[in-house]
Length: 422
Figure (spheres, rainbow, N blue to C red):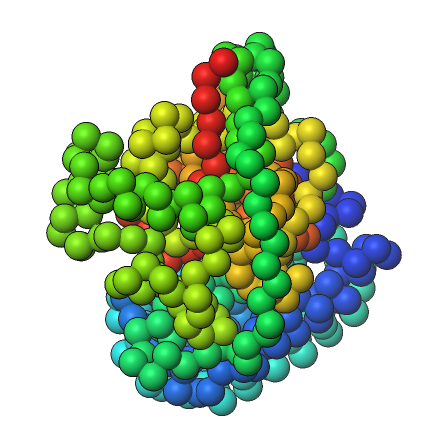
């Protein structure tokens, strides 16, 4: 089956270098993944602390498997796979490719070793660069490579969020990297900016790469609304807690309240029991009241919004506002890997929960061929998040980018922005 419709025609996807070099982009992004794993010991890379978390070793292998399975097997004549069982071990959820190893048991894979996985990466990298150097890639092949690079950047963020959860569960409170002197940026007063209603275009519209779930571009009517000019802070969320926010069922959706009780939630993930400290990738440190609150579920974000006399924005409202903004903010490239206070922009720091369920846009068509399971099969029981986080690659983000997680998810860098009707 042809893969011509996998991604939109693209001459300058964000993953590429200014001269459009696939080879240079491939090396840069693959090297970034390796650099993100460099602060870790082999023992850190094999731990799985909950079903949603994958070991670092698995991320390193899965992103490599993606290139081997979807590109080298089909486009590199004579290519010999690195190991005949790696497809089973490192396939994530592509049932059309084979039976994946159970997600919740990835932490049981003591073998292959971390060293084996780095050998695997080198093997695939050599063959990928040979393939791309051999001749100018066809449009189909270039589209697949770009998709693989965008996929790897998504896993770079997952690698960071997953290792944060792993380290947080260790009583020794180990750090991902040495602590940097935190810079305090005081917040201004929370203000709301109004946006006119009317018929708006939603979804990706233009040239360049985009995921299938970002299209097609379509019209959607919006009532007039307003958005807060910044994310909700730790200090503001602490007021919600102090006012009994976790004890008042009237503020919560029924499923969220049941989960809050079952899981004994009393604060965001990684906050200390006395609400004065939080665990970060640099270890535990004092809670900065001006920093954006993060690691909250959709249920917590929704309860806070109701307590504040507001609501969460819909994804169409968020995108309509963000379409007027440049993608600037605090992303993975800044090196901070933690939300920064005092910024007023729609991108970066934390993913923002929206009030929108993750559903297909009108006329949605998934990728064709074996890669068609990438996004569409998850369009149920998930909520949309927008804007990117301090662990996201800035080069990936745009106003139409749709992230999605189940409403109970807390281990991602997820926060909230308030909206109101006008």
